[in-house]
Image (cartoon, rainbow, N blue to C red):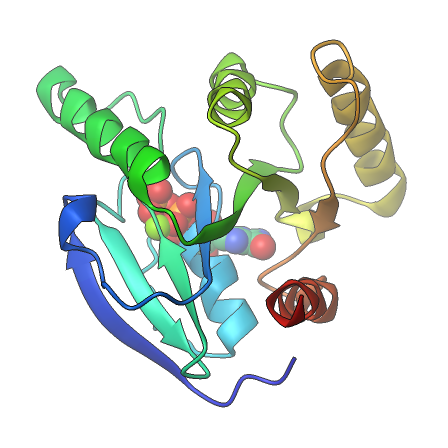
Length: 197
Ligand code: GTP
Ligand code: MG
């Protein structure tokens, strides 16, 4: 798929205010700082369409972008960021959960995992939440440029093995780097093929 246009539409803290237009939608979720906003910019070949930061907790709202006038891409706040207040964390959790439960046009969710990290309880629990709510998801390993290829393969194989303890089949996976552009074509071709179905 070629990207012809990528426009910011709106930010919300409540899914009921999200765009009403019935376009297929794809959401990006994962722990704070995993690289959700960076991946969106890499895919769209835009430097600062989504705001990024070295500090976790940058994205704090549900952000809708309209791509090619055909589909929505959604940048979500990260989960599992210990530094925000408990009250704020509860609010985040509420609106993120609500987003997933209410957004009917959501086609697929991309759960991002830092390639360097071993499976974390919060990610596994989040995938379970998606499964329980019958929300299709793919796994995206990010920051692949930070590891050598043999370490990277080892890490991903170990990750998948642990997932098989709780899942019968593995979700589709992508390997990406926002620094090198790795995975861009596969990612966009996947979305393009789903949109055509
Ligand atoms: P929150 O909005 O805080 O939840 O974070 P996020 O998941 O949107 O992460 P963001 O895209 O803001 O990136 C966090 C940090 O990781 C930034 O310093 C990025 O430059 C860096 N980063 C993201 N992706 C990559 C990558 O593929 N490779 C490298 N080397 N750094 C990356
Ligand atoms: Mg972000």
